[in-house]
Structure formats: C-alpha cells, structure tokens
Length: 510
Image (cartoon, rainbow, N blue to C red):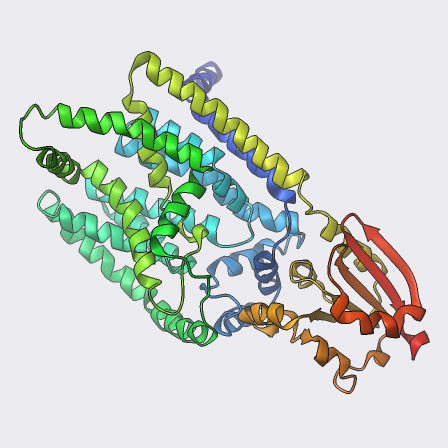
C-alpha cells in the first residue's frame, strides 16, 4: 500500500511540476514583500480589526472605511494570535497564493492546461498581484471569492447539481460582501447566461433560482452602500479624477507590469488577427471580414466568457465614475484582470513550434526576473522598515504621560495602531485628506497647527515628555515656533535612517 501511495505521489509531482514551480515562485515573490512599507490604508484596517466586534461595523458606518467590514471581521479573529504587521499580512498572503491556483483552474477548465499554466505564471509574477497579496486590505480576499464564484458558475452551468449551486450562491454572496465590485461579478454572469440562454435554457432557470437567495442575502448591503455613498458624496471625489480612456490604458499598462510588455502583447496579437481574417477565404470587404471575426468570437462561449468578465466591469467603473465620486482605483479591478492574462496566454499559445517556444522562454525569463526585481526592490531597497524602527523605539521608551507628535501623513500610519495618545501636527491640505477617513480612527487626534497652539484645549503641561517624529527632509518652516519654544528642553535626538525623533522634557519647560 505504501509503495502504491508513494508511486501516486511521485506521479502527481512529475505531472504537475510546472504548476508546482509556478506556485513556489509566486510564494517566494510574495513572502519577500511581507516587510514592505506600512501604508495608511493598512493602518486603518489593523486599527479597526483591533476594536470590539460591535464597534467594527460602527466605524465603517462612520465612513472610516467605505467597503463592508467582512475582511476586517476576519482580520480581527486572525490577529488574536498576534497583532504584528507581518502576521496580519499573512492572512491576505494566503488568499494571494490561492489566487494563483484558482487562475489556473478556471482558465484550464475553459481552454486547456497549457493556457491555464501560463495564466497562473502571469499572475504569480505580476507586480500588482504580488503587491496586493500582502496588503492588509480586502482586495486579495475579494479576488479569491470572485474567482471561486466564477469557477462554480462554470461548473454549475456545465454540470448542474445542488452541491455546485449551493457553492456558487455561497461564494458569490461572500464576494459581494467582501467588496462592492462583487456586484460586477454577478452582472457578468447574468449577461453571459442571458446571451447563451438558448444553449443552457434549463440551467438558466436553475441559475435564476440560485440568484434569488443571493439577492436576499446581499439585501442589507443596499442600505449600507446607499448610506456610504451619501457620506462620501458630501466629502467629494474618493479617488482623483482621470478620464475614462486614460484609466483603461493605465490599467492595461499597470497590469502588464510596463507599457513595453503591453506593446509586446499587442504586437503578438496582430499576426493572429490577420491570420483569422485570411482564413475566412472570402473576397468581401475588409470590414465585413472583421465583422465575421467578431461574430465568431461572440458565438464562442469560452471567448465570450473571458471578454465579458474582463471588459464589462471596467466599462461599469467608467459609467459609475461619471458622478461626483470616482472609482478609478486600479486595485479594485484585481479579479477582472485574471482574464486579461488569460487572453495574453491564449495569444502566446496560439503560435506554433519554435516560435512559440522562443516567446515562452523569453516571457518566462523576463517576467520572472522582473517579479524578483520588484519584490527585492520593494522589500529591501525601499525605505519601509525605518518607521517600524521608530515605532519600536518609542514603544520601548514610552510612558503613559508621554505625547507623540507626528508631522507627516505617511509617517503617522503605523502609529494609528499604538495604544498611546497621538497628535498629528500637519498642514490644512493634509488634514483635509486625512478627514476623508474621519478623525475617529485616531481618537479625534487630527489637529492643525493653530489647534495645537491653543493650550486651553490641548494643554501640553499634562505631559511629561514629547516625541516629535518626522522625515529628515521634511520642511518644518511652518512649525518654527515649536522649536523656538522647546529647543531649550530638547534632551535627545534619534536618527533612524531617513527619520528623526526628537525627545523633549515638557515638565522642565513648564
């Protein structure tokens, strides 16, 4: 029995060595990024997850975070083991690694194993997927649930059963709860089935019945997002405005890792398109040939599924962004660009023999090296650990009577997770940006310079010491008064790479 099981194991390894290699590469590139710079959005999620369960939804309703707190509830249970940043990032990392496998399963199910493997490779080496696989935000979870929804949707319409119908409804509902754009996943599936209702008439009816419990389950979200929309509408644009066409082009550039890669993919697709037109063997006008090519694509369920699942959500994002609130955030589109990679993979696999092998070898080498360069640069050659060192320094020496003052909107992110009284000295432009997330995140500790000067409201006398944290190259000209008043009581300066930490003894000053 042992010899048979070992034989099966080795057979599995040898048969799936390509997928295993892609998986290992993706894991390495993502683990390298666990120490990347800690961002403000991550601090928001970590701060919210540390609150009592009943307060998490309350903070979201106050528009500290716009999406439904499904991920933050998961994170709150996850960090009970450890609340360190590295451990918190392991949760999205698990989903990010699983996304490589799901990309392979969906595309292999639609086309073949070779295209599925290449798609998984493109996902594993993509800079954007690597980066957001370790971001303490919902995007990695959202991608996983969206891919699971699409996978069981395909399974359900091909081989309907109660089990597959249940899993499809379950993962689709969770997908929508994880992010608002999960509605686009349901929309793409609806359009695909409506266009193919003649081929799947009985399954279409079963899907329609499956959609009813999904709509019932997600009905509370309608009120939630209506409330959130009103909150953010009062604030203004959630994301800076860019033209729709520029958003689409920029998305393709970003997910291609570089515009030169995008140009390469476009260049590879041109000979295929020309060949398809020539294969029609008719003498009609050029435009009629193009129309026939698109007609063939529209009647091919597999290509139809890929193109609708990729392009429709992007078009919907552009339509939604016609209003005051803009949704042009590239990381919102993470699940949909899996299908962009499947299109690229199908283009590359279309080539035959030596040409295909040459393109594959070139693509694998360049993208593997680019992924490694990105992970190493972001993890080790970018200033990201300095703020952690500052945090550790203050945590080791801080007393309850100390006050931490931070003069940088990027620097204060990590301190939002410190259980100490924190004040943010900043200018009004940064304050306006910070108020988008509401002052509740840091216990109403956002202040302007003028606010801080009013000692009746914020008496410095009650603190024993003051820690001033700022970047070495920060322009401090607008707080010269601060140094003039407290320079005599300066007791120590810590220089941590690009950061300066100045410690003042306030009791001596007063």
